[in-house]
Image 1 (spheres, rainbow, N blue to C red):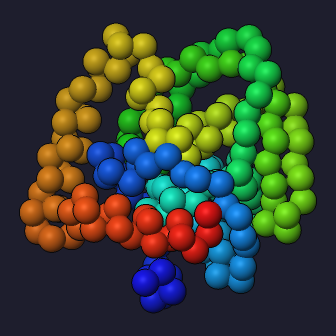
Image 2 (image 1 turned 30 degrees about the horizontal axis):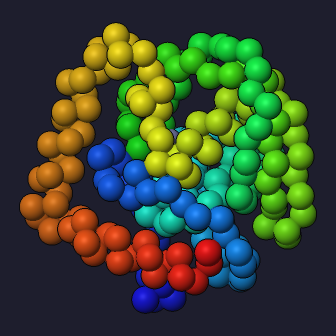
Amino acid sequence: MPIEKTDKTLQIIRYPHPALRHKSKPIRRVDAHLHQIVRQMFTQMYEARGIGLAGNQVHLPLRLFVVNLSGSPDEGEEQVFLNPVITHPRGSEEMEEGCLSFPQLYGPVRRPKHIRLHAYNLRGQEIRLELDDFLGRVVQHETDHLDGILFPDRMAPEARAEFQHELLDLENTFQEQRQRGEIPDDAQIARELSDWESRYC
Ligand code: ZN
């Protein structure tokens, strides 16, 4: 059950874990437990030296992501975005991206330069932002996660082909972990995600 599970520390999952392909439903309630989860997500993100982390990257089907562009717990601003919706995409810009679920992989991704973001914070307050900066890029990458979209999906085929080998390595590692029983089977993962959804969505 979800309550017992949170006593375990959250862990960042890696490609091709099926939870990364989960399309998260909107969150309908926020409780003390969810605040704790968000705290743990920041901790995991800092330990992994990231600047953004989405719910399904820690095996939770929760439509939220956390960001601190400084990547440091002592600097920058910690931001939490619940139920983000991106509209009014304009322009186009290519930029190098990486992802905590694809360690050491970086590649060029083309995305809109300007977006509007509508979301909520943990206190239920509305967030409305016009973004055309690095935060806008991170917001697009993280919102993609919540829809089960991963950054190599957004890369041009020629660029993606360049790290076909690394993707295969990640796939092999995943299969080995599964054979050792470290990763549950697809049916068990689906059940766990669905338990969480029945609680928050
Ligand atoms: Zn990512």
